[in-house]
Amino acid sequence: MTLTKEGYKKRLIDDKIEVYLKLFGAISIEGPKWCGKTWTSLNHANSSVNVSKTEYYNLASINPKNVINDNYPELIDEWQLIDGMWDTIKNECDEDNKKGKFILSGSTIPTDKIKERMFHSGAGRIARLKMYPMSLYESLDSDGKVSIMDMYEDNVKIGFDRDISIDTIIELIIRGGWPENIGVENKYIDILPKKYLESIITSDDINRDDRKRSTIKMEMLLKSLARNESTIVGIDTLVKDIGQNEISNEKIESRQTLADYLDVLNDIYLTNNQDAFSINYRSSDRIGKSVKRHLVDPSLACALLNLNEDKLKTDLNTLGFLFEGLVERDLCIYMNYLEGKLFHFRDNLSGDEVDAILEFKDGEYAAVEIKLSENGINDAKKNLLKFYDKVEKKKPKFMCIIVGCLPSIMKDEETGIYIIPITSLKP
Image (cartoon, rainbow, N blue to C red; front, side):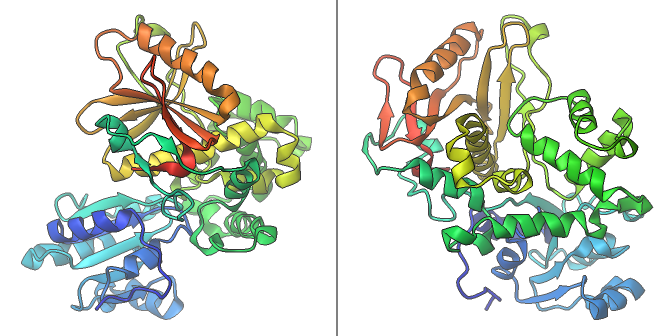
């Protein structure tokens, strides 16, 4: 009998965990704080220990074996805090080659000091799984009437679904995919993301590897990333952006320093950037290589910029970028579940872009445009058709427009492009 918490909502990663526990001695679930790693891990564990608690930390620091038992699977929460824990788990798995012995859960990448003493990669013994905040399908805000694989197999049921208002879309963005925020009254949904950021900025997590970093600079960087959510913005632009909004003695004066701060945000899983897609376009030299920048959940951008429903209703441009962040958060989760990857595409010469490229594990791919409302559908079709015409050799398996406020699941008869509400989508 596992330690499943009452009220636990099934996550997509649950299926993968069940499979991996049959294949590997241990699994490591990695992702941002508050995304549900512990609850999900408990859903598969028969015993658990959290080494961030003082008594267990002290025991494990003396010898990691002090917190290990044979009531498998055993969850070891925040394992990365203990020097030698990774290698101990790997060796425990080597002893008898049993499967499903341990579940490791962590909300930060191990510090350089601990990584230096990790002598084994864990390959073949410890499988790494990435976890994110909840998608709309997991939080039951998407009814899942059409899946990505339905489109892949050209087996989509067309027809009316339901009306979704712009108010609902805004609420989903502000609330975010944090499990503890699901079901909270709408007037309170902005509180948790703000407290989340406060806890991060004031924690020791930003002072990794014995380096003291300015909380003021980190907050300014986060606000810059929030202003540039879902855009292809370079480090120079971020440096300039921060320089225009801080007092002179608090400037981040070099690319190297800023890169260090960005690395910290990546190490604590607060950012989730979208890599550029390389494709057989007419000229590979003109294909952009820059990442599209995302915070791990668009609710964090709202919290950093103090955006509420009224402000977003009067700033549709900002709302559009945040909606794109919401959709691409979900697409990342869905493609991870399907063992694929999420990219974006940009032609540096013409400026042509495709919001999202879904690459499947068999090498096929799909091109996706994202629009807040029906008003943008025609422009999205033009963008996708232009991309389709310019791609040489391997064409996309399918093309799709994902829309916020759309009552029906549709397929354009002339082009074959799917037009899908985000609140109807699942993997």
